[in-house]
Image (cartoon, rainbow, N blue to C red; front, side, top):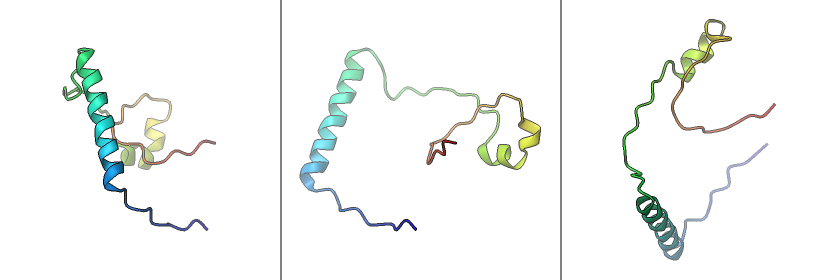
Length: 75
């Protein structure tokens, strides 16, 4: 059984390095003419709970879901 082992808190130096990397990525996006904060409209046709609970209704149909992928099971 997998145990949850608490991760060590990042040090000030590690946090500063992460912030530096994020600022560099932001600068690169901006220099390329991309606005990383632009709002994008995405037409969501269902939510994951609805698809899971009514799978037969959605089987063979295309749906658009939005959200964060928290885990992935490859079969």
